[in-house]
Amino acid sequence: MPKKISIIGSGFSSLSAACYLAKAGYEITVFEKNIKPGGRARQLKRDGFTFDMGPSWYWMPDIFDKFFADFNKKTADYYSLDQLSPAYKIFFSDDIITIGDSLEKISEEFERIEPGSSKPLKKFILKAKENYSIAIDKVVLRPGISPFELVTKETILKVDQFFKTISSEVRKNFKNKKLISTLEFPVLFLGAKPNKTPSFYNFMNFADFGLGTWHPKGGMYEIIKAMLSLAEELGVTIHTNSAVEKINIENRCANGVTIKGKTIFSDYVLSGADYHHSETLLSKEYRQYSEKYWSKKTFAPSSLLFYIGFNKKLRNIEHHNLFFDTDFEQHAEEIYDEPKWPTDPMFYANFPSVTDESMSPTGCETGFFLIPIAPDLEDTPELREQYFNLMMKRFEQKTKQTVKDHILFKESFCVSDFQEEYNSYKGNAYGMANTLSQTAFLRPKLKSSKVKNLYFTGQLTVPGPGVPPSLISGKLVSELIIKANK
Image 1 (spheres, rainbow, N blue to C red):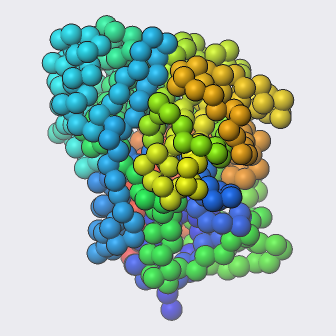
Image 2: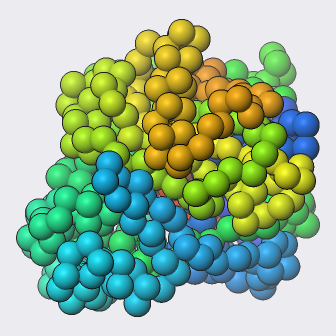
């Protein structure tokens, strides 16, 4: 009989692992606490409007292609992709930078801002491309067990880049503050400040300028639907509204989970839920990491999110829009160094209906707004409304239009929701930041060191935060389980 595996959570990493393990012949059951699968990538539908509740950027299309190719499938078997042109806009206090769909177009925009800057840009992106190849082919496909995983002939030649920062590398080549912010922006996906992120991670700039920004028709939830379809095709069983109350241990070996007071036996347990929360499902003697350990780690930001239905088409916007018309560094300090509600926050606005008419009723606009904030902040309706008004005032000023009078509805999501809906540690939105001291083998482990047959996956373990890394995390942990069972 095939061995049984209970998987906690149904986000990208859990579904990825479920597919690989089912393909290898295991009997897989996934347990999701919420009423819909998808984890943080859930979907909200209301009055004809469709919102991705979490991830909204489709970067690194090659990672998605590789995932489906491992099952002799293509992304096109499940969803259609459009490359965004332009990729996004960045609103500054005195200008707007438009990031085109090719390096040539982006170079022209850099030249407009700072004559002569296209030459160092192309060199920078060439180096980023080399790092991307090393990262994807050599580094992120390692399970984070040993520091020697980072030692390859390629990384040895790049070792200095692990001790320099993105910020120092960018500022060495570019002087204009707007271009600096533009080049430092992609590493925010890694959850850390640019001056705390190793310069090797400039491969995110290649993911941006080299591979482009894409949109799956129907939204990011189409990827979840594709993975659910593949999982079910492979025989995976998925139960929603099934919060795991306990990971059961016998003789220091995981042998199932408890749900609604009922014991469900399995040979292995794999948690793709928040790592910290997952360990609270164990008695203290079986936890690898103490509360003190977690409290000292650098976590990615939380977010204040708004899902808004507008009764008209908006002007002067693109699919993705970044509002960097305030002090980038001050906002970062108020997230990481002295955590508090930001004085004058940057924010992000996403309008998928600009390029995908299926996302909103005819003549309307689907709006997703995000303000990055420190995790574990006080979260009240009054604070949410205060920052909504602050943000909308600036949005109207920068896009030269009135929009508040055209709001049909708005829904918000913030720190307390991340905690309640996803059991997220301190309400973080993206997991643990990829700083030097939290990279690769220095991250929480995929395999429990205290309980046999207990494993973890997702953005708090290797390789790190983001959708593509989560797909890879699921593959890595499945390989460890398969190897252990040989």
